Image (cartoon, rainbow, N blue to C red; front, side, top):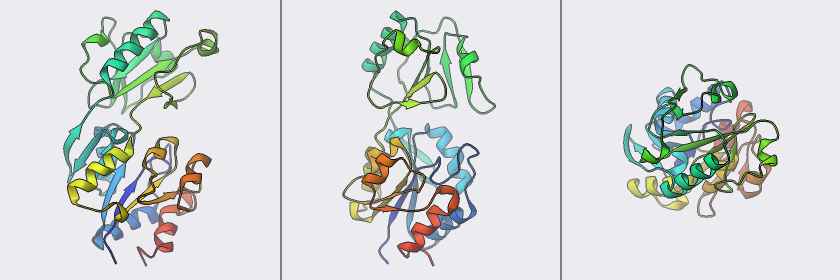
Length: 258
């Protein structure tokens, strides 16, 4: 069989959210595909250091992370770029003018930084992901923006008629909007170029809105049964839910595993 290059989104595709647990059948597929000589990579919106934490658990050495803005090959970070800096600065200045609290992830670490201590009331930190409050923090000094979080009180977004930085955003819990790169296809193309793999050898699995960017006509697109309807419309094949052996059933269907 022709060698394939498989790209898996993490949350609610390869692993069940929020526990982050990989179903046994999905882990079997990861191991078996690699044993048979296929290439396997994650394709996630998570920041690279977090994606690698998961990759090590799954036994995967190649990673497209940061929504396509970083690639890691054989466990080593090869490239990583932030969002458009000028656009981020301009938007944060706009938020300041509206007195809207914000936080940013400005380095390859699990966490975010903000001058607004009230953010801890909206989004308390957890053991792995830290929120650091520095009252004098100045976003103008930031070289790279990897994520921007915006926080609203009930009804405030509508009352102040807050503009969005881009039309691509994620509602990240109550009262929080997250902006991050959503160009997974960019990272996939960089990855397959490195391995000299043709587009028709690529297979992608996804479930969410940020996976729309990696569902491309030149390769095989598989949506989970629990995927957003918009993604299913772009899929070449729809498997079962993440927690109902979706990865395994798709791999069996296409005879990539026995």
